Length: 109
Image 1 (tube, rainbow, N blue to C red):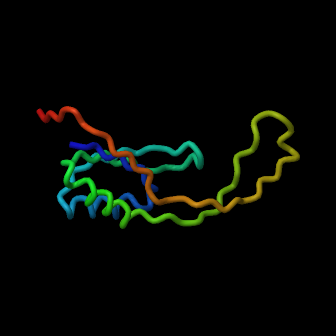
Image 2 (cartoon, rainbow, N blue to C red):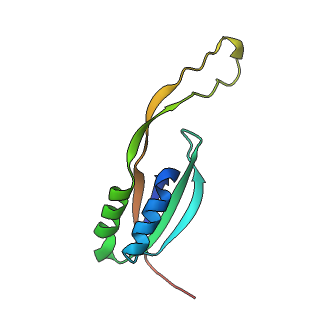
């Protein structure tokens, strides 16, 4: 058995959730916040048999798209903030960050 932890952008969350249910995957959704952009994302925890891991990963890949987004950088801590002019920076966001972990034991009460 494996635990798949997938961190996805909020924009992809509902689409991925529907696709997982459609393919009979059970998942727990957690509202999380990214450290880099300080924006909301969703973390899915999916427990599945080893033979279904590739299918789950394909569903995640098909439903989580990366995209370009303009973000305003955060002002530097300390120093003179009057001279700091934040120019938007284009960064790639979205897609999915996925971890696949072995599960030693699964219990359901």
